Length: 228
Image 1 (cartoon, rainbow, N blue to C red):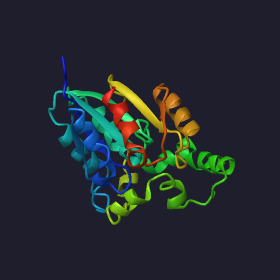
Image 2 (cartoon, rainbow, N blue to C red):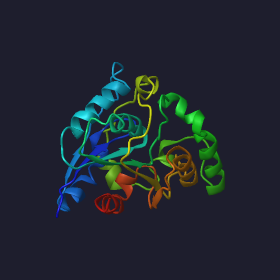
Image 3 (tube, one colour):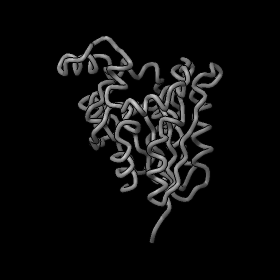
């Protein structure tokens, strides 16, 4: 029997729904519903609890939901999935995402998983700058016309969300997937594979694309999501 799935799409730092604008029409064209969330990234009074509340409200009581989280969005998505308050939540998909441990803050995550050293090692091996630059690490594979259409969309990210522990005690018994961008320079693929194996016992699915895979390779990502 055909089931209409609601995909709740959680952005990363900057919190703008525009990040998902190339994926949403592909999911709806496949007969599903897609809800791309805006998070209050520029509000210093809003942190992880406020982000999680927005995600939870979007999941709501829909009967078949897949929660998809990009980068920093992994923290509020994990907290919502672990509550057990949404019986229709069928799966959570981490896409080039920060995968938290129970009680961990997003501020501590970087050192805990060794992100900086992994990023530097990949840069030295790949031949790009070891100094973090947005163009080199985030935008290198995003088409220029897509970048131009998104000028001014992303909000500045406050530090508030990085200070509050992720409030869950154990991973929920739902399908958990990890997508790792083959060309991600910020979270290199071998780094993502290691984190997913250690923290979730999950082998990531590697797709072409960099850290902003929904902007650079939306067709591959949408096809993957629809097949879950």
